[in-house]
Length: 608
Ligand SMILES: [Zn+2]
Ligand SMILES: [Zn+2]
View 1 (spheres, rainbow, N blue to C red):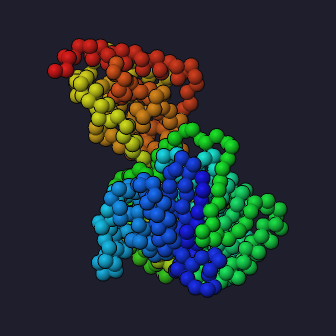
View 2: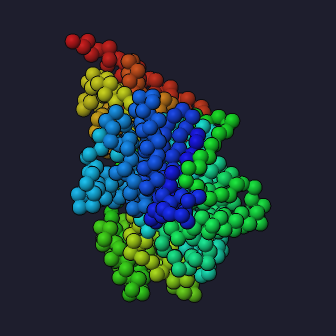
View 3: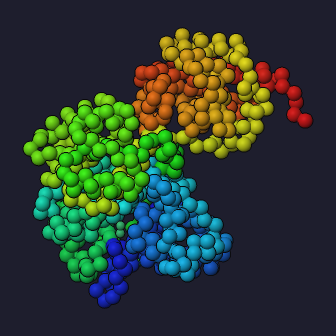
């Protein structure tokens, strides 16, 4: 793939004699794969020239200009070029626009905001191209030959970084990201990585090209804490730790002249050389193309598309438990929570917090790291809350001092270093909440859903009485696998209905909560070894609450016409692993249930 920089500047466009070499336009980068898929990362002012180039090239061929626009966040410097992107005004073109999902707003509403009549004469509806908008959360998704992983960055607005894999190569776009506060000393020097930084390093690991925010220098940083940008030094340290092949310093400060960028690159190279870094370090330059190719075969497996799913926000209480003694901190947290639509539960002490999470299922807890308390003591408190909380609760500590780096305690999700701005607090709450909500994902619909449903309805089996010929298989499954629950499920349009159930009282559940809806998307047995450790199911109501299922294995059931209509599945309240003979036994039982379905098929009247 070819990666081209169209805008490299941060914050505001800066045209003029001092920015000629590195460019004055704000963030825009294109990625073109060998198969021709076009991704555009952000639409700062640099997108204008990209649009001109694309339209001009299409004039000679007559081909449409189609593509995918990925917006990391909607600060001005990343969206201002959108109304000036020529391909969006041609009805022959088709574009997909992706951006981070808000709590109560979608990406198209946010973009429409900047194009309201008061601010601009062109409205979102004036785009003539066919445009589809997609809201993203953390996870993975696929665009044609490209696999994309998203991750929330550390910025005072909900911001996604993009890890893009195609043609056997990887480019990571990680801009508008600040080191997690735990990592830096008061002078701006890096102490090490905390949990969030370590996860960030994991996100960019082994990239062939890392495009990283590098707006500030170490000595400038203390005055810019909370502004949401990295230092050059941090960008280098992340690149070194993640073993990337090329580091492109990006989001140049508008005050930085070309000569100043030269000096910044020199400084970055010295720092990289000092630790024996063998990768290339350079400043992103407007007009520059980096070609990334690998002889390694591209990954064949499609990812489970978690990033484009709708998180189960309605099922998760939008509430935060706050246990801090400092009145200013508490007031700021209450204000941020209220602005984001959270109900706040203020707690005097740890016992009150524990009661809060137990009774109200509060998904987020903010505690106070009182000065003088050791990390072990803080972690012990966090553990006490976790014991009573729903799985996966977010526990953050507010601290007025620099929290420890290089000592990661899994019980502590995050640190909030005080003072913090309202936008910072609100973004943190959003990211924690969305991450939690995304721990339960409804299955996507199969490509042949209409035909599949037609085949299911043709069977005429839905809402019929229980029958011994099906019940015997669920009974045998429970005995064979020593599990409390076995079901013959049929996945209907909105629900899954149980033709036979052993060990479960309900007769049907909503399709969104159905593991079988996932199972019918695969050809073979679908196994969830431990639902609590699986981000697709950890918050599923049947996992998080009664009957507290942990293990699932379902074999898809097809009609004689080949349509997958349901499953024979087994479940347990403890994690389980199935060995190959057990999997084969489950497949066998599945084939027997399929034979019963085929028998219904044969009995049913021929279609008129
Ligand atoms: Zn920016
Ligand atoms: Zn920004």
